[in-house]
Every structure is written in C-alpha cells, then in structure tokens.
Length: 79
Image 1 (spheres, one colour):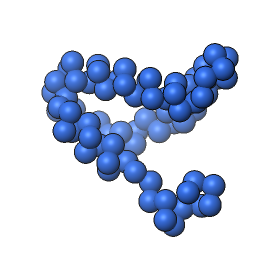
Image 2: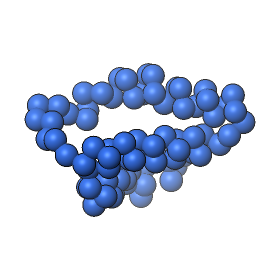
Image 3: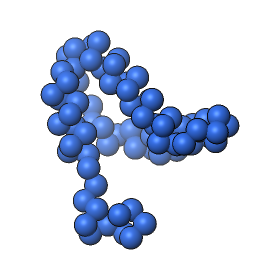
Image 4: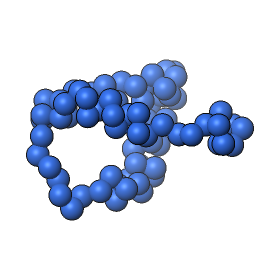
C-alpha cells in the first residue's frame, strides 16, 4: 500500500464524529438495524477496499488492536 506521508488519522476526527457516525446511526434507525451491525458492515466494506489497495490483513488487525479503548478506567457507561 502507498505510504501517505504527512497525513494523520487524527486530522479527520471532525468528519468522523460530525458526519460519518451520524450517517451510520441515522441509517441504522431508518432501517431498524442495530447500529453495531451497520458499523460492522461499514468496517468490512472499508477493510475490503483497503485490502484491495494493498493494505495487509496484519496491518488491519494491528490497527484494530491499537484502537481499543482501555475500559478498566473508562466511565461506567463505556465498560
């Protein structure tokens, strides 16, 4: 996969929180589907696109593992 030097995941936080997640939640509500099912479908679709562009499965798995929230010290609602 091409290395995207100079680009950071964090630079897209506003887009993700203000546009993408609301679209997922709205679609889930409109289709009477649990939000996590829609989110998982989006994840699988994006992972497929990334793999087709050359991103290895091992990189995807490491990224998912690195993104885990530490739930032990998280607010009760997140645990």
